[in-house]
Image 1 (tube, rainbow, N blue to C red):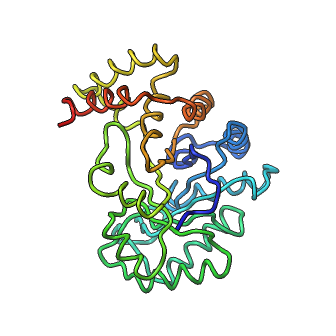
Image 2 (image 1 turned 45 degrees about the horizontal axis):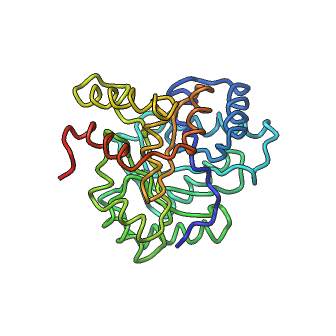
Length: 290
């Protein structure tokens, strides 16, 4: 199932580029895209819902005027979450009917000013999803050249296995960080390795900068020590910790700060020592491995 597209190892997440975050202007988006690309970050991660269904269009308008060649970047987007803001829904829910998936992708393509997505992800699993119907939509979209590859986000291995009876799944994007390490233990990453799926991590810095807890204090103390040893910055070590995992995780970084983007791109060069990796794991978990 080896995926074919050359996604950048670090992926730029566009969730906060628009109204859900920095509210970047068209020129700022063009500038930020260029900055990412010049640092080797050529893959951009979207979802239809970002900015209450507006951020894809903000990005697309900028991309349309950026002069960036489509074949030089990779665009990922997601569908399936039906929100009450931005749409006339009574309740937040998931929709994976054939017609909806097809319509949603066509909307994303229009907004993003592109003829195809490199990768389409189902955003979250629905208890009501029907593999045959999903497979029909994906087969048609692939046949029409509207998507190159198909994957999922936040799915368990058993949910993926259910889909794979009808359609190959080439990627899974899940929450993973030093403070949220469950994919290493619940079969998610084992599945990605054994089935050669592309693995992506959202929220790769975890709660290290968001919370002041015993756990984050232990982690920061260890990071301070290791920063000196490797002559790098803390967030780079958090990414290097993720990058060492054999499932070859692609961290999706949410920052719009140019310096942090540059630092993140350089994290792929850090070769974290085996025991340093386990020292960070121990700092996070509060005890040594069994």
